[in-house]
Image (cartoon, rainbow, N blue to C red; front, side):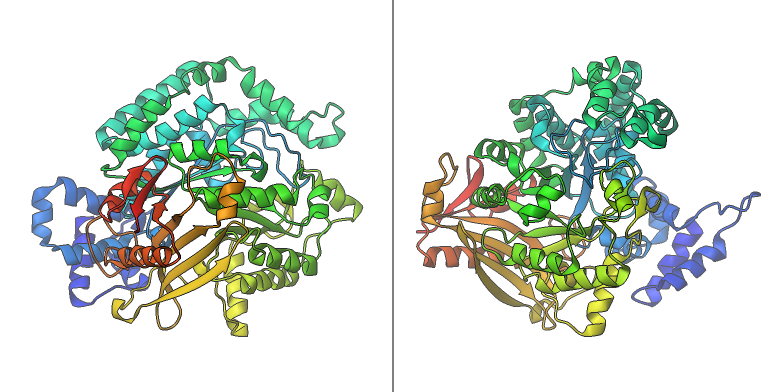
Length: 608
């Protein structure tokens, strides 16, 4: 395999980059086949081999005579799925263990191997199940995979999914987050040893992670939920979860060690500030009716910076028809509180719900992203699909619900993209549900690309963030312009500051919140005072670049510092005496260098 590396390096010495076809030609030239026809090595194996030589084999590395600039281009050439870190950070998604749910939405999957609404065939869920839903094991596995794919992993965004966060016991919540940080803080050798010990503990307790064994164990109960074959012993999701986990000796055994204190977590936080894998964002999923001052204060203590909420719709009649037991007043309060606490808001929104029409969906979404009571920072916008075992199946069978045609769906989503303002990012347009689990509805994984092609064909102007972000492209820093977009909410005046290229692509942005005096006075127990502005997010796009390094991406060229300086100017001119930042644990040191001081749940800088 070393000969392949040599040929790739020589080819890159002659030209700036290699096309996929050119790289494949080099690989095919050397790749031999085993007796069963399989290739002995493939592209996915070359980068890990190259990294091992660079890190462990001094003589072989010396013989290759590769300088830093060539090394960077080789890694970029061999990197798998480059969009994974095109937003500037490496993302690790973890799933909490199966748990009961207080809602019974008619479209929601009820897979008892997973937390409510998730299916065991989804990629992140498969990883979670293989790793006993243990946060340390999930993080260690994903960190290893990202490194082998050639991605920088010194800046990590952690995404914790699995239903309603506050439904889990408080000690479990603290333990879960503590183990995420522990996995990122540990050295590689320590992780290997801890993984071995942790797996042994689960196996010894009797917890199974074999998919076939789990399918066999849950088949009878799952059929009772799904009413397969007219089963007369139908049971609820929560009843089955109680049987499988709460009343199970193996799960009770491991639950005994799934506990941690805030003191333990604080020590892990301090270590992460200078760790090789720093947490630059922590996202937690919950319901809007679970948002309170107490729950948000706990999330800040855990290090959370963004809250995902299942909204689905702001049409109350539609929510009731789909089994959503929440009012729009409660949703509006959740957005106000999250914004006042400084959190980024990430909403789940669905089209094609039971009772919706294409036109009502367009109105619903347009109101959601423009009404001052909502105006989310980020949205997962995806269509409802029919999954076995959901109450929506009976609606489909009786003809009261049908999936939109592909043409209708693309039309609705295209209209929604056009309605999305420049301060909002549509992060996804599909769930990772496998095609075999979807009875009817969209099964195409490239739905977003289809929508974007439709918009490009129509030459419509799209302001949404992800459509405009520089992604894997290179930029000329001298051409960037700082653009400012101001909008109002029911609790604040918001300033969205963005670095844009001449053709409108976005290289970085900052969210500045100026809380209204009456909003601060209206909510007792807030951790902020009158006269305090809030930086809710600073993000610079481009390939994830190693901390304190530079390159062709937008990161580490002072763009973030300039955004912060401008935000301070705006807040000062508006009469605010100080400015907070809802910093992630791994960005605390960065903000200290920008003259912010640690101040309880935030970091703060005086303005006057």
